Length: 347
Ligand code: GTQ
Image (cartoon, rainbow, N blue to C red; front, side, top):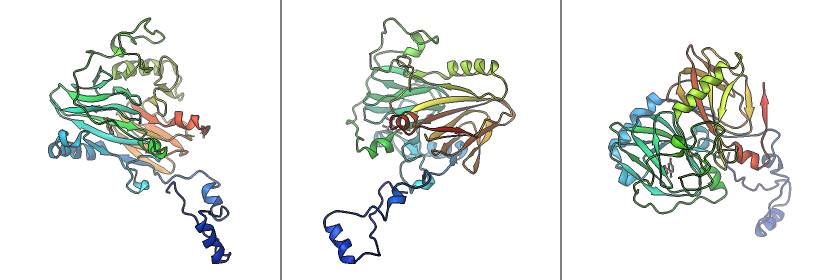
Protein backbone atom coordinates (compact mmCIF):
# COMPACT_ATOMS: atom_id res chain seq x y z
CA UNK A 1 0.00 0.00 0.00
CA UNK A 2 1.32 3.39 -0.96
CA UNK A 3 1.12 6.23 1.54
CA UNK A 4 -0.55 8.39 -1.10
CA UNK A 5 -4.10 7.43 -2.02
CA UNK A 6 -5.22 8.63 -5.45
CA UNK A 7 -8.34 10.77 -5.34
CA UNK A 8 -11.36 8.80 -6.57
CA UNK A 9 -14.31 10.33 -8.38
CA UNK A 10 -17.83 9.58 -7.20
CA UNK A 11 -19.19 7.73 -10.25
CA UNK A 12 -22.79 8.41 -9.20
CA UNK A 13 -22.34 12.17 -9.63
CA UNK A 14 -22.34 14.12 -12.90
CA UNK A 15 -18.90 14.05 -14.56
CA UNK A 16 -19.06 17.84 -14.84
CA UNK A 17 -19.20 18.08 -11.04
CA UNK A 18 -16.13 15.84 -10.62
CA UNK A 19 -14.27 17.84 -13.26
CA UNK A 20 -15.14 21.08 -11.48
CA UNK A 21 -13.76 19.68 -8.23
CA UNK A 22 -10.53 18.59 -9.91
CA UNK A 23 -10.07 22.02 -11.53
CA UNK A 24 -10.27 23.48 -8.02
CA UNK A 25 -7.82 20.87 -6.61
CA UNK A 26 -10.59 19.35 -4.49
CA UNK A 27 -11.40 15.68 -3.85
CA UNK A 28 -14.48 14.03 -2.31
CA UNK A 29 -13.72 12.37 1.01
CA UNK A 30 -16.65 9.97 0.86
CA UNK A 31 -15.11 7.83 -1.88
CA UNK A 32 -11.90 7.32 0.13
CA UNK A 33 -12.91 7.57 3.79
CA UNK A 34 -12.54 3.85 4.53
CA UNK A 35 -9.24 3.63 2.71
CA UNK A 36 -7.82 6.51 4.74
CA UNK A 37 -9.38 5.17 7.95
CA UNK A 38 -9.75 1.39 7.56
CA UNK A 39 -11.49 -0.77 10.16
CA UNK A 40 -8.19 -2.53 10.94
CA UNK A 41 -4.56 -1.47 10.76
CA UNK A 42 -3.03 -2.35 7.37
CA UNK A 43 0.56 -2.78 6.29
CA UNK A 44 1.92 -3.95 2.98
CA UNK A 45 5.11 -5.13 4.69
CA UNK A 46 5.20 -8.91 5.14
CA UNK A 47 6.99 -11.17 7.63
CA UNK A 48 10.23 -12.32 6.02
CA UNK A 49 13.56 -13.96 6.90
CA UNK A 50 16.89 -13.41 5.18
CA UNK A 51 19.26 -16.34 5.67
CA UNK A 52 22.84 -15.50 6.55
CA UNK A 53 24.07 -18.50 4.57
CA UNK A 54 22.43 -17.08 1.38
CA UNK A 55 23.48 -13.51 2.03
CA UNK A 56 27.07 -13.99 3.16
CA UNK A 57 28.47 -15.17 -0.22
CA UNK A 58 26.68 -12.27 -1.97
CA UNK A 59 28.22 -9.78 0.44
CA UNK A 60 31.70 -11.19 -0.08
CA UNK A 61 31.07 -11.03 -3.84
CA UNK A 62 30.08 -7.36 -3.49
CA UNK A 63 33.35 -6.83 -1.61
CA UNK A 64 35.22 -8.20 -4.65
CA UNK A 65 33.14 -6.43 -7.29
CA UNK A 66 32.52 -2.99 -5.79
CA UNK A 67 35.43 -0.81 -4.64
CA UNK A 68 34.71 1.00 -1.37
CA UNK A 69 35.80 4.28 -2.98
CA UNK A 70 32.91 3.88 -5.40
CA UNK A 71 30.30 2.52 -3.00
CA UNK A 72 31.15 4.76 0.02
CA UNK A 73 28.96 2.35 2.00
CA UNK A 74 29.06 -1.24 0.69
CA UNK A 75 25.62 -2.45 1.74
CA UNK A 76 23.05 -4.97 0.56
CA UNK A 77 19.67 -3.60 1.60
CA UNK A 78 16.97 -5.92 2.99
CA UNK A 79 14.00 -4.95 0.84
CA UNK A 80 10.71 -6.19 2.27
CA UNK A 81 9.08 -8.29 -0.50
CA UNK A 82 5.70 -6.63 0.24
CA UNK A 83 6.97 -3.08 -0.27
CA UNK A 84 7.44 -3.14 -4.04
CA UNK A 85 11.22 -2.92 -4.13
CA UNK A 86 11.44 0.05 -1.76
CA UNK A 87 14.61 0.50 0.30
CA UNK A 88 12.62 -0.39 3.40
CA UNK A 89 12.18 -3.43 5.65
CA UNK A 90 9.00 -1.94 7.17
CA UNK A 91 7.21 1.22 6.06
CA UNK A 92 9.35 3.22 8.54
CA UNK A 93 12.58 1.21 9.01
CA UNK A 94 15.57 0.45 6.82
CA UNK A 95 17.98 -2.46 7.29
CA UNK A 96 21.06 -3.48 5.36
CA UNK A 97 24.17 -5.61 5.75
CA UNK A 98 27.42 -3.72 5.34
CA UNK A 99 30.78 -5.32 4.59
CA UNK A 100 34.21 -3.78 4.98
CA UNK A 101 37.56 -5.39 4.17
CA UNK A 102 40.85 -5.11 6.07
CA UNK A 103 42.55 -1.79 5.38
CA UNK A 104 39.45 -0.13 3.93
CA UNK A 105 37.82 3.02 5.23
CA UNK A 106 34.29 4.21 4.58
CA UNK A 107 34.45 8.03 4.53
CA UNK A 108 32.91 10.32 7.12
CA UNK A 109 29.51 11.95 6.83
CA UNK A 110 26.54 12.94 8.94
CA UNK A 111 22.82 12.86 8.25
CA UNK A 112 19.39 13.48 9.66
CA UNK A 113 18.42 9.78 9.94
CA UNK A 114 19.49 7.87 13.06
CA UNK A 115 21.54 4.70 12.66
CA UNK A 116 22.55 1.69 14.68
CA UNK A 117 24.87 -1.21 13.89
CA UNK A 118 24.84 -4.76 15.20
CA UNK A 119 28.00 -6.66 14.32
CA UNK A 120 27.36 -10.02 12.64
CA UNK A 121 30.80 -11.42 11.79
CA UNK A 122 34.50 -10.60 11.98
CA UNK A 123 36.77 -8.54 14.21
CA UNK A 124 39.11 -5.60 13.88
CA UNK A 125 36.77 -3.02 12.34
CA UNK A 126 35.62 0.10 14.14
CA UNK A 127 33.10 2.89 13.73
CA UNK A 128 34.10 6.41 14.74
CA UNK A 129 31.22 8.49 16.13
CA UNK A 130 32.16 12.19 16.65
CA UNK A 131 35.81 11.19 17.03
CA UNK A 132 35.08 8.36 19.48
CA UNK A 133 36.50 5.04 18.34
CA UNK A 134 34.03 2.18 18.77
CA UNK A 135 35.58 -1.26 18.20
CA UNK A 136 33.29 -3.72 16.40
CA UNK A 137 33.17 -7.29 17.68
CA UNK A 138 30.40 -9.80 16.94
CA UNK A 139 27.18 -8.91 18.79
CA UNK A 140 28.26 -5.34 19.67
CA UNK A 141 25.67 -2.58 19.26
CA UNK A 142 26.85 0.88 18.19
CA UNK A 143 24.54 3.85 17.68
CA UNK A 144 24.99 6.88 15.46
CA UNK A 145 22.53 9.54 16.63
CA UNK A 146 21.15 12.04 14.09
CA UNK A 147 23.70 14.54 12.70
CA UNK A 148 26.76 12.94 14.33
CA UNK A 149 29.79 12.53 12.06
CA UNK A 150 30.70 8.89 11.56
CA UNK A 151 32.98 6.72 9.48
CA UNK A 152 34.10 3.11 9.47
CA UNK A 153 37.59 1.64 9.37
CA UNK A 154 39.21 -1.77 9.57
CA UNK A 155 42.53 -2.73 11.20
CA UNK A 156 41.93 -6.50 11.25
CA UNK A 157 42.58 -9.36 8.88
CA UNK A 158 39.14 -10.71 7.86
CA UNK A 159 35.98 -9.18 6.33
CA UNK A 160 33.67 -7.61 8.90
CA UNK A 161 29.90 -7.55 8.40
CA UNK A 162 27.28 -5.73 10.40
CA UNK A 163 23.56 -5.03 10.28
CA UNK A 164 22.71 -1.36 9.72
CA UNK A 165 19.36 -0.18 11.10
CA UNK A 166 18.17 3.29 10.13
CA UNK A 167 14.92 5.25 10.18
CA UNK A 168 15.37 6.38 6.55
CA UNK A 169 11.80 5.60 5.33
CA UNK A 170 10.31 7.46 8.30
CA UNK A 171 12.58 10.47 7.89
CA UNK A 172 11.91 10.49 4.15
CA UNK A 173 8.20 10.49 4.89
CA UNK A 174 8.73 13.73 6.81
CA UNK A 175 10.80 14.94 3.81
CA UNK A 176 13.66 15.51 6.22
CA UNK A 177 16.29 13.10 4.83
CA UNK A 178 19.64 14.56 3.85
CA UNK A 179 23.33 13.88 4.40
CA UNK A 180 26.44 16.04 4.39
CA UNK A 181 29.06 15.56 1.71
CA UNK A 182 31.53 12.81 2.48
CA UNK A 183 34.94 13.79 3.76
CA UNK A 184 37.88 11.46 4.26
CA UNK A 185 37.79 9.54 7.53
CA UNK A 186 40.09 11.13 10.10
CA UNK A 187 41.99 9.24 12.78
CA UNK A 188 39.73 8.87 15.86
CA UNK A 189 40.32 11.36 18.72
CA UNK A 190 40.05 8.56 21.30
CA UNK A 191 41.32 4.99 21.28
CA UNK A 192 38.25 3.65 23.09
CA UNK A 193 34.58 4.43 23.79
CA UNK A 194 32.78 5.17 27.08
CA UNK A 195 31.63 1.55 27.51
CA UNK A 196 35.27 0.63 28.09
CA UNK A 197 36.03 3.02 30.97
CA UNK A 198 33.06 5.23 31.97
CA UNK A 199 30.03 2.93 31.70
CA UNK A 200 31.34 -0.33 33.06
CA UNK A 201 28.80 -0.89 35.86
CA UNK A 202 25.01 -0.46 35.84
CA UNK A 203 23.69 2.48 37.88
CA UNK A 204 26.94 4.47 37.76
CA UNK A 205 27.69 7.40 35.49
CA UNK A 206 30.95 9.34 35.42
CA UNK A 207 31.11 12.62 37.36
CA UNK A 208 32.96 14.08 34.46
CA UNK A 209 33.47 12.54 31.05
CA UNK A 210 36.56 12.60 28.87
CA UNK A 211 34.39 12.13 25.80
CA UNK A 212 32.58 14.88 23.84
CA UNK A 213 29.15 15.76 25.30
CA UNK A 214 26.67 15.06 22.53
CA UNK A 215 23.64 14.16 24.68
CA UNK A 216 24.29 10.50 23.87
CA UNK A 217 26.90 9.45 26.46
CA UNK A 218 26.65 5.72 25.64
CA UNK A 219 27.25 4.81 22.00
CA UNK A 220 28.50 1.22 22.20
CA UNK A 221 27.21 -1.83 24.07
CA UNK A 222 29.80 -4.64 23.89
CA UNK A 223 28.22 -8.05 23.45
CA UNK A 224 30.46 -9.51 26.15
CA UNK A 225 28.77 -7.24 28.75
CA UNK A 226 25.27 -7.66 27.36
CA UNK A 227 25.53 -11.45 27.17
CA UNK A 228 26.77 -11.73 30.76
CA UNK A 229 23.89 -9.52 31.94
CA UNK A 230 21.38 -11.65 30.04
CA UNK A 231 22.74 -14.87 31.44
CA UNK A 232 22.51 -13.52 34.99
CA UNK A 233 18.99 -12.24 34.43
CA UNK A 234 17.93 -15.62 33.02
CA UNK A 235 19.31 -17.43 36.07
CA UNK A 236 16.99 -15.47 38.37
CA UNK A 237 13.84 -15.81 36.30
CA UNK A 238 11.23 -18.54 36.51
CA UNK A 239 10.92 -20.66 33.37
CA UNK A 240 8.41 -19.04 31.02
CA UNK A 241 9.12 -15.48 32.17
CA UNK A 242 10.69 -13.63 29.22
CA UNK A 243 14.33 -12.55 29.69
CA UNK A 244 14.68 -9.22 27.91
CA UNK A 245 17.08 -6.29 28.27
CA UNK A 246 16.39 -2.90 26.73
CA UNK A 247 19.24 -0.68 25.56
CA UNK A 248 18.81 2.81 27.07
CA UNK A 249 20.44 6.23 27.12
CA UNK A 250 21.88 6.30 30.69
CA UNK A 251 21.31 10.03 30.96
CA UNK A 252 17.57 9.82 30.34
CA UNK A 253 16.76 6.17 31.01
CA UNK A 254 14.82 6.40 27.75
CA UNK A 255 15.33 5.06 24.27
CA UNK A 256 18.85 5.07 22.83
CA UNK A 257 17.77 7.08 19.77
CA UNK A 258 14.90 9.53 19.18
CA UNK A 259 13.06 7.23 16.77
CA UNK A 260 14.44 3.74 17.41
CA UNK A 261 14.54 1.37 20.36
CA UNK A 262 16.58 -1.81 20.78
CA UNK A 263 16.17 -4.94 22.90
CA UNK A 264 17.82 -8.28 23.29
CA UNK A 265 16.11 -11.46 24.42
CA UNK A 266 17.60 -14.62 25.91
CA UNK A 267 15.70 -17.79 25.05
CA UNK A 268 16.33 -20.83 27.19
CA UNK A 269 16.61 -24.21 25.42
CA UNK A 270 13.14 -25.22 24.22
CA UNK A 271 11.55 -21.99 25.52
CA UNK A 272 8.45 -20.61 23.79
CA UNK A 273 7.69 -16.93 24.43
CA UNK A 274 4.15 -15.63 24.98
CA UNK A 275 2.54 -14.31 21.80
CA UNK A 276 2.54 -10.54 21.70
CA UNK A 277 1.79 -7.82 19.19
CA UNK A 278 2.94 -4.22 19.27
CA UNK A 279 2.13 -1.20 17.14
CA UNK A 280 5.87 -0.80 16.53
CA UNK A 281 7.56 -2.81 13.77
CA UNK A 282 10.72 -4.75 14.64
CA UNK A 283 13.77 -6.15 12.86
CA UNK A 284 15.39 -9.17 14.52
CA UNK A 285 18.99 -10.31 14.27
CA UNK A 286 19.90 -13.77 15.55
CA UNK A 287 23.09 -13.43 17.58
CA UNK A 288 23.26 -17.00 18.85
CA UNK A 289 21.38 -20.25 18.60
CA UNK A 290 18.63 -21.70 16.43
CA UNK A 291 14.89 -21.72 16.58
CA UNK A 292 11.78 -20.42 14.86
CA UNK A 293 9.36 -17.56 15.24
CA UNK A 294 5.74 -17.18 14.26
CA UNK A 295 5.09 -13.68 12.86
CA UNK A 296 1.44 -13.14 12.02
CA UNK A 297 0.59 -16.42 10.31
CA UNK A 298 4.10 -17.14 9.04
CA UNK A 299 6.62 -19.49 10.65
CA UNK A 300 10.23 -18.42 10.07
CA UNK A 301 13.04 -20.73 11.14
CA UNK A 302 16.33 -19.10 11.98
CA UNK A 303 19.92 -19.61 13.02
CA UNK A 304 22.82 -17.36 14.01
CA UNK A 305 23.36 -14.55 11.49
CA UNK A 306 19.81 -14.58 10.09
CA UNK A 307 17.66 -11.44 10.02
CA UNK A 308 13.86 -11.35 10.07
CA UNK A 309 11.16 -8.74 10.24
CA UNK A 310 7.92 -8.43 12.19
CA UNK A 311 5.75 -5.69 10.63
CA UNK A 312 3.66 -3.64 13.09
CA UNK A 313 0.71 -5.28 14.87
CA UNK A 314 1.73 -8.79 13.86
CA UNK A 315 1.61 -11.36 16.67
CA UNK A 316 5.10 -12.62 17.41
CA UNK A 317 6.15 -15.78 19.23
CA UNK A 318 9.67 -17.22 19.46
CA UNK A 319 10.79 -20.79 20.06
CA UNK A 320 14.38 -21.75 20.79
CA UNK A 321 15.74 -25.13 19.70
CA UNK A 322 17.72 -27.28 22.13
CA UNK A 323 20.34 -24.67 23.10
CA UNK A 324 20.08 -21.10 24.42
CA UNK A 325 19.39 -18.47 21.74
CA UNK A 326 19.87 -14.69 21.70
CA UNK A 327 17.66 -12.45 19.58
CA UNK A 328 18.50 -8.80 19.11
CA UNK A 329 15.81 -6.49 17.76
CA UNK A 330 15.51 -2.84 16.83
CA UNK A 331 12.17 -1.12 16.35
CA UNK A 332 10.40 2.20 15.82
CA UNK A 333 8.76 2.23 19.27
CA UNK A 334 9.87 5.77 20.32
CA UNK A 335 8.55 7.24 17.06
CA UNK A 336 5.27 5.35 17.47
CA UNK A 337 4.99 6.54 21.09
CA UNK A 338 5.76 10.15 20.16
CA UNK A 339 2.78 10.07 17.80
CA UNK A 340 0.47 8.66 20.48
CA UNK A 341 0.17 5.36 18.62
CA UNK A 342 1.73 2.93 21.08
CA UNK A 343 -0.18 -0.19 21.99
CA UNK A 344 0.80 -3.75 22.91
CA UNK A 345 -1.27 -6.86 23.50
CA UNK A 346 -0.47 -10.31 24.86
CA UNK A 347 -2.10 -13.44 23.54
O1 GTQ B 1 27.16 3.52 7.53
O2 GTQ B 1 26.72 5.62 7.39
O3 GTQ B 1 23.31 1.16 5.52
O4 GTQ B 1 24.81 6.39 5.83
C1 GTQ B 1 22.92 3.42 4.97
C2 GTQ B 1 23.31 4.75 5.05
C3 GTQ B 1 24.82 2.79 6.28
C4 GTQ B 1 26.44 4.45 7.16
C5 GTQ B 1 23.68 2.46 5.59
C6 GTQ B 1 24.45 5.11 5.76
C7 GTQ B 1 25.21 4.12 6.39
